[in-house]
Length: 319
Image (cartoon, rainbow, N blue to C red; front, side):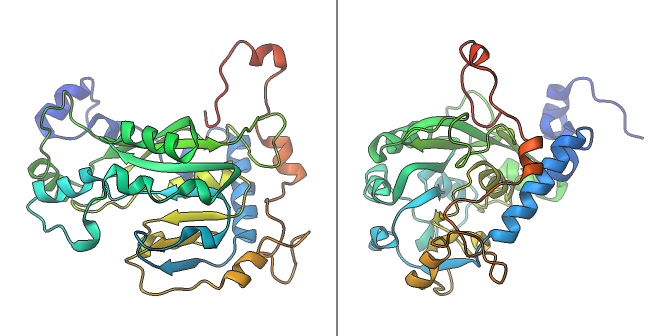
């Protein structure tokens, strides 16, 4: 039996094992074991989403030249840009920066014109690493979004076989603290209220913290749990991810990136997924633009507090 750790900071200095390694029941399948109603809500939502997600669509394309506007408007936009921070990590670990890993400048990212494919209302989820929060806010301003949340990925390092890589490949420079997390800024275009827009969002189902093991040195892969958070939160079914790689291809999403093997997207067929009045029993992925709810889900999910309580506390979407 392992001894109980009472000083996690000292343990980190002695072993390089991060304090968050000691957090228990952080995995999605464990998190709600003591909360049966929340656990049942997550199950029902996940089953409904899975049933009505369309087959994965993807486009192999260079986003520097690809015309995003031809794809129409989207309810959810997920972006993990090739930030300079990512390239710097590779160089610090003496790894080669390949052509597709070359970083984009802030001005180049602004030229994506995300505002042209963002519906009103819509949400954007923008990974900002540890160093690009200010850049993310600047992009939101350019694209017409207002920041409404900040999801944090807290990285564990339980896999001892990778710890030497972590230590050798990290140069903390002028940072005051060791960085063990990344941020995903959430932006809103338009106006959405929890009480009046329940056809578009189901708020307060998930938290704003994701805890998973850090990827191997050089990888920019992000936790899969973020997809699940997005899908449970926003009922809009038109979802797009930019700068995607093969591991990002997913049911219910249109993925675009230069590193995909090929293209599987026919515009007319793709648009037909969202143009029906009701979901088809034969093809349950064909239906209306927004995912519908059920009586069971409505009975379980958190509702907006009474108006007098709303005036006393700030509005939040995730927690």
